Length: 335
Image (cartoon, rainbow, N blue to C red; front, side):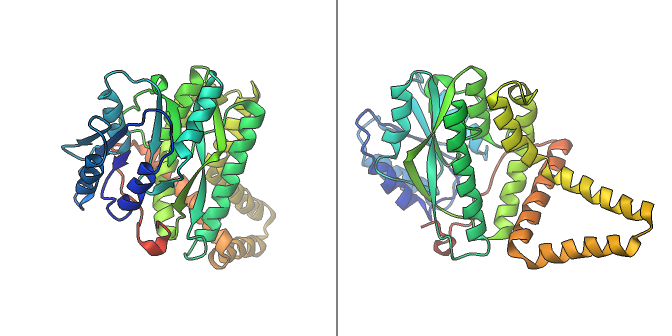
């Protein structure tokens, strides 16, 4: 787990880690990315409650970002074996989460990774909480269907998922979406993935449109890094079931802003060619008003603008993958 200034949520997070009922050997690796809010002291206190050798804490000498921090933790393992459970500070595990994440990998030697199901808290207390929750629940259902149909889901819930240690591929410098990269790297080597409905975790749902906009923009830029890097997994899209799932689930969504702009250009061109300037202007204004006044349309429009800006960031070149945590106030649903 990589940590940067997560003192607000760490006590509850560490308590959820300590409560795991996993029957096998369990070790904890924490990377502090220059935390300055007391997170390091909380991690040290947790380590003091564990047996010697069961917990290791590494502190970065400078901000490196989550992917580089996780790379460093794995590189410091003497012989990476067993299963890595990668998790975020804001995600609270149930007592059986690790057990249920590991179970599919034990039951089927062809399975290289497993994903948890997120259950949101704070779904009725924020600006966009109910919309974000609805979107994520749709994603979860889609990934479970992909598991059943294709033996692979298209990208894990990055807050808590499991990967065979020998499949860990160091995330390239400046890559923003490390979990998606690691997942696709395992698939590229022929492994399967399982979305496990019994491995549940809790997380406060996004509350503020501004926070989610910033997060979606960063993810959008990282999506394009992975789309180009793993293009052989989805092109041509009808090559196999997983290629179709990747293309229809992810690629089409990532290019939706471009398709919307193309549609707008077609409407404007049609107005010019037919001379219906007022009708065309009326349609554009109506759409703009609806996107401003209707919460669901405003959310949809904002997230697509974020994806478009993420694409622009990718085209301009991504120079750093250092991140800032979203708001962790109790009213945001983090607790």
